[in-house]
Amino acid sequence: MDDSSRVTTKDALFIIHYINRPPAYDTASSGRSARNMQASMLHIGYYKSVVTYKADTVRSGEQHRVHVHYTLEAGKPT
Image (cartoon, rainbow, N blue to C red; front, top):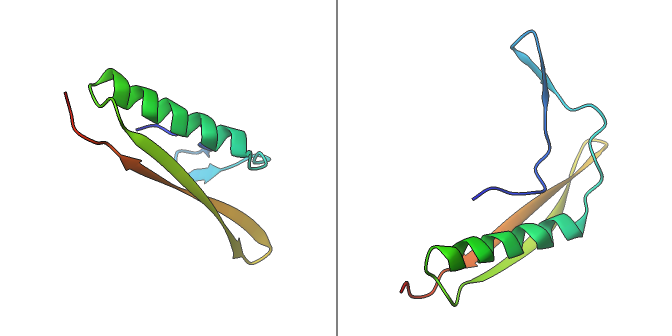
């Protein structure tokens, strides 16, 4: 499943990948992704699916990175 809070990268010379001014983390994007995942599960036949997420902040040198972990409970298919 795709995540709406994904950061896009740019390519230079086909081997160098970089992020030009990465956006700040927004919890609304993670909530929107969880709702989209739940709607996708509904459309493919899982009526009682539950999607939750947890955001962890990791420090790498002077950088603060956010890792979002999604948990999807599909339930019974119809």
